[in-house]
Length: 51
Image 1 (tube, rainbow, N blue to C red):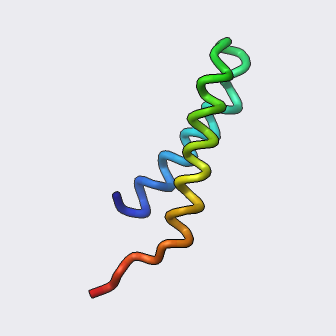
Image 2: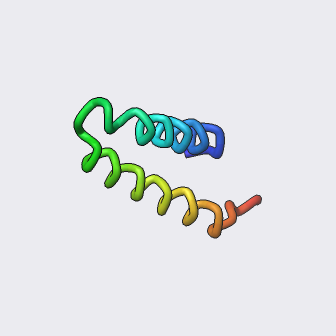
Image 3: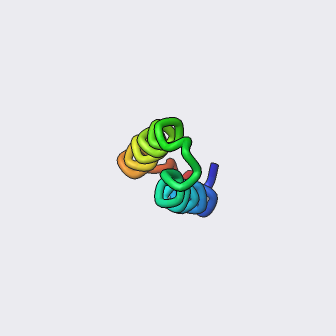
């Protein structure tokens, strides 16, 4: 997955976390947000191989 779609997904997770308490399913979205942040930082620390 390229960097553009990664940023889109992270931004979407941030927006969803903001609006989640009003929808009533915050715990599930909080877990998704934590997983997204962990995936985001792991993609930062693993540099793509440029052949």
